[in-house]
Length: 158
Length: 158
DNA sequence: TCTCATTGTTTCAAGTATAAAGTTTCTAAT
DNA sequence: ATTAGAAACTTTATACTTGAAACAATGAGA
Figure (spheres, rainbow over the protein chains, first blue to last red):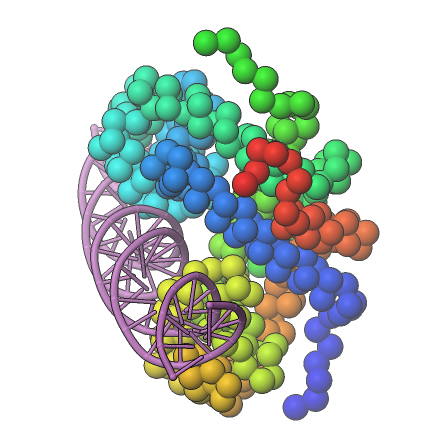
């Protein structure tokens, strides 16, 4: 079988692949650092923190489905993490007043108190981990991340 | 307790946090697409693919520990994934000639044949998913990802 | 040679994650 | 008012992932 032509510009494709691999590595690196510090300092896991942080920033709570979309994880995942957080008294589920299928999850006072401090530390950790990234590079990288989530216009994508 | 001064430049810290959150979302988005396509098209999971791809690019194989460092995952994780890949006949473990504690893992002929095609498709998927990111932005973003993994020089980091 | 901290790997328990299937409720169009 | 389809959520099975503990092998220094 002859070599098929799959790419208009293969060097460009390879460069994009390089970016993808570097993104993966950097995300895993930062996650590792965060995981360790949350565990050591707060007896907290990263996925619990992610859920708590989203709720901490949402004064009126969020629906389960809003949480899973915001965090880009499955519904079943959110169900499990919220279950554990609720068992620890850090979040609470309330029936949605408008939709009897839905729940509004929110941080409890205890959870909020814990998070006020943790969110602050987390911000400092991220700032420090990214201290080598300059202001214009941060802005540019944010816009690249947003571009990646645009729908692709290439035919090879469904 | 009075508000402590934790940041020289809090707006900059918040901007870096924004970047971090966007990185997380984009990585999870791309992972979701890759996961689905690998499952539908090749009955393959993403973590198995990641290991296979690393080995596919390493003609002489890799040690377990090299794999876990390269992929930024734990040793125990690699042990499990390699076990499953070996059971499926896609990779093989050989004792290291230089170190009796170590194994050299490599792709089997069957694994290589499968991967030759899959790697090509994977490249096309990534290229398509990132088609909105221009050449200079890709280059810049790669360098940002590398910067993130430099040791931080700020005091708040251990 | 002995010793001992380190390295390479596996094992295990607990937690995280997905996909698919199931339940209930909602909505829109008859 | 009925009904079909979609949406919100949970449940289940399976797989992944980590951190810590265990073990053997290494290597550097006494």
